[in-house]
Image 1 (cartoon, rainbow, N blue to C red):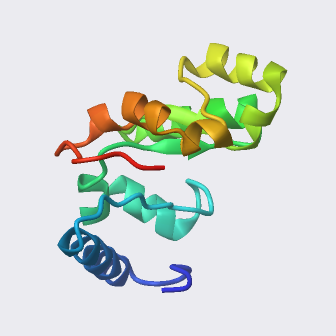
Image 2: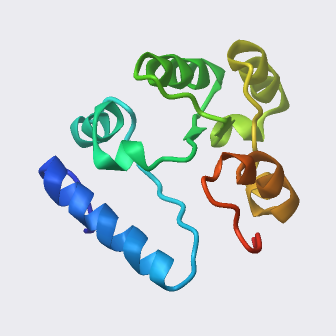
Length: 137
């Protein structure tokens, strides 16, 4: 699927199941980006109640600024979900990073952090249902 816009949830779930099964058959762990914001119809359906939500080990929320980081954490919290960290443009500014940490209580991961096997091991591996054999950037 090039986009999930206006697709029925059942079709999105079937595509997700195929992607995860294919990756697993090849021995890969899967990271899925759910884009377009938490208010977009299809994303909202995934986060509220879906087979995809049930398979999430963790959420990394991307935000442009500290206020958006707080908003994302708040909205996801209302859905019973909590991001383990925040990333995105907010991580490009030391002031915005400090504000987001204070407002959300979540760590902020920069682009460089996301490339680091050590950082991924520290933040992501504890969330996984099955320990990976190796973590590679």
